[in-house]
Image (cartoon, rainbow, N blue to C red; front, top):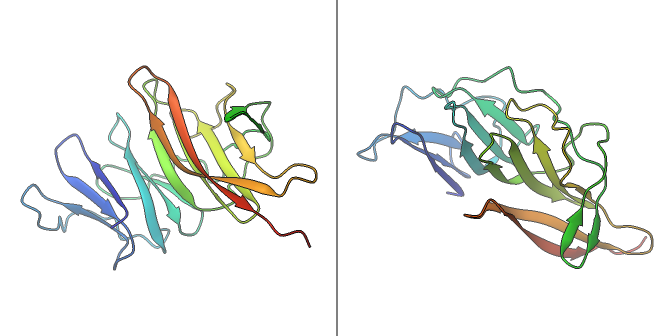
Length: 187
């Protein structure tokens, strides 16, 4: 099991690498067979789950599309944009991500972390290969015109990549991002 989230009604969502990849448990730990979470769009590991204030469920991981949103009953929420907006490249300086403007939408790798902010906006962290991602979406799942985040590719002769593994919201409203440093061999 790689991910756990609790819905407002107390039911528990679990995700990981097991048959179906996403399940919901009742209060007593039995599987909720009324949950429709076994969807063809979730065809690989579920690494993170977050529940929005309206009950919608955000699921990220190493599956086709990397990110999907479900209704509270587990059915696919088709209102999430198919390609969320990704923020522009960010420079990595002294442990801080310096944001710039928006670029064309795309997720370049698996999603490892999803955080729903107090104002409903959504932060997504992940990445693979040659770039990490830190994306902020509006509460409805579309682009967010504010700054903050971006793709974290190597720049110039630098072959170091920072894959985002965890995004956490601290009590003061500050966002903490943890990364794994990865060096890419030049070709």
